Image (cartoon, rainbow, N blue to C red; front, side, top):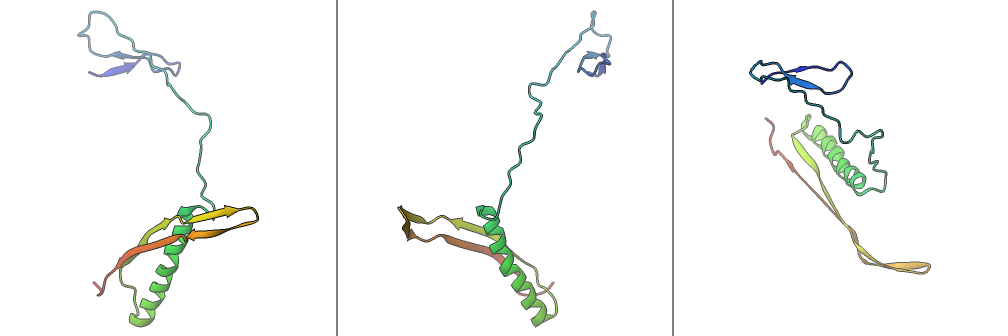
Length: 115
């Protein structure tokens, strides 16, 4: 059923445009939540996503240079998946020791031929 806007005051008052109803119907709605501020996550240099992005960018740049020097063009590749697995440390007053180092896994694919 089509609806027509009844109120010109900015509210969401709607009524059916069909004459099938013997009486007018008006619907009033209000927004349940209208935030005044927007919250944005900023990922700085120490954030795991930023670290992974930089680690994946380095081999991609090196691979591009290598392919252009060797073949004169760049083959298609994706070296864009990175996983940072946290290690473990023992923290002590004035120092500590690494129990298990952080692990970085880079994954991707490279086409072996052009075209």
